[in-house]
Picture (spheres, rainbow, N blue to C red):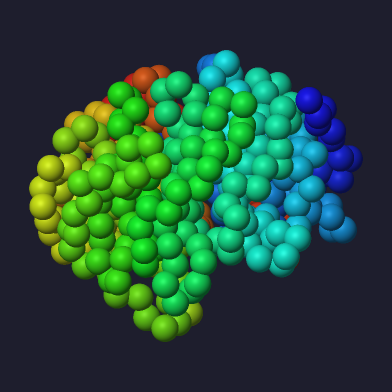
Length: 374
């Protein structure tokens, strides 16, 4: 085991950040958990009843991975990074957490890495090099037994392959299995019984498959994916399932800084889905952008999203966007928020850019009662 350490510079940055003011939510409570030079929202997970968050920190000279447990002070994890990004936190067994991220390898190629964090955020294993070739993107979900399933793409940019791997309870990455040729932008979603669905792009089509071990079964081409212009940027793709229906969301940003979200949905046994469309309210209000869905198997899907400049909660059925609930006004995001759904309520995390200063990393806790009243 490796114990964690705390850098004084981290607390100084946090104090400076808090001094710049905290937004006032329409409901719930906002907490400033850190300050960082990152556009990504903090990664979030709950394990053993404890809420963990993680992000990429810097003291001006070094870059490091930071984590926080519940309301405790943030700590620096002894996971020597180079240029880490796209963190994911997943629940494991016994109150532990799987932490995953992309980073440069010894060969200057991008690899997927992981670490197993204990209930007190002690690094019990890691960093572990998960992928073994140049890696472009990934998606990961935790299973009921505390293991994790990971899908990542890598190899040649002209024809990347889609690979599946399992991470066991001890944080060890199992053997790599090639599962699809010409696969990109994977998005995994799991059900409470351990069923995992994989959505990914291949030659401009959206495909759906059921993950069985390290294999993809019942693969179906659902429809075309949204067109991406030469100056556009496609951010990580998100998927959600509730047992009968599946959803896929694409967040796209343009060279001028504008962003938009496209989505599609359909039943999990359908041989095709409707064509992706831009996510806009039925009443023709402000389009929605930077959407990320919460996990869960409730009939209605909940997702964190930006509508205009207001951080909001969206509710969707399998067929349509039903409405949004405004949560925090005057927020300008550069990436999708993170969101956790519990019986008691929601936790939403986001990165709020500052003028010539690190972004503030914020968490909003909203009770289920407050949400249902709005």
